[in-house]
Image (cartoon, rainbow, N blue to C red):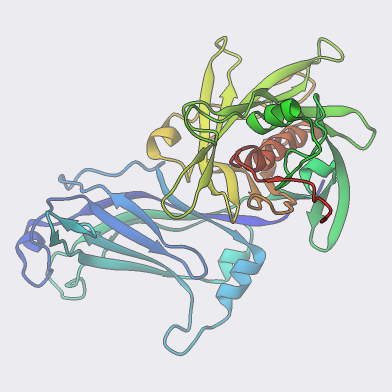
Length: 433
């Protein structure tokens, strides 16, 4: 399998140092720090990312050199587009970090205005597309409004900006998951079949549980059972020889919670993600669990997918790796990425063991931070052909890729499994007299 080239742009080791004279200066616009400082990180073509910046009171203090505050993932086409000159007032793309004190919003009905302390800019250059690790900037730099005035102390920002190659394998299901599609690898214009996906239900109902309407000819008892629970779904991933190399199946049925017609957080449905057991033929060994439920919103609903890794070190231990909300109507992206998770989850990120069928879990190193996988899915009622990206560093054999395909299939089917259970029953038409 050949990967596609991706680049990880990471911004970390953030810290702010403000001289006493700057704190008292009316020119600087800085008067007090009653709330944490924030910075907005901007890069052309990508959403703005907002992170906090610690204020360092001691001149000798230095930020954690290994901390990552923000990351952008760029394809070759992204870099190529940014190197093309823009309009006359913004001819060159750049990484821009604007630092503020205060927060947006209001307090007790009184508007709170943010004050901008300064801005750091780094122009996009040819080295961004070289595909080699490079530190673009590391250290302190003055960003205050008086930074150009000689002899005056300025507000200083400490940061480390680094580029690293982050190659990925890209896969796509060539049809909806429930139609048992092939899974193909994408490499430029080349498409190569890698796996096949087989979807089944242990208890096959007389009607499709994913359809919008139920047939009026179905037996009432079967209809009520199917309307009130979704269970027995199973997805098996097969390699080109036809051997099963990974699977996902529902272990906790998707049922409506008491007093409502949807799967609630208090009683989520769950999938078990498994790989073949190397010691016992025709058996599976658990690798991870995916829980899903529906969150009701004032405007639109979302489906929450919570992924937990099953630890081999402690029996029944579950390690939270990701919890993602996906727009139920429009779809979205399920991902595992320590850079995009909450800081507490990132700090506690455990090693991600390899699910390869050889049983050797030592080949895959710890998750030191960064992208692991993503799966883009469509909203409910739409034909979804999941697009999966998988970091090359987490793949040591074909079974490693297969287990993530099973996870992607479970995430995709969870959108349908979490649809509201209340449905209109289409009664058969009666001939007019």
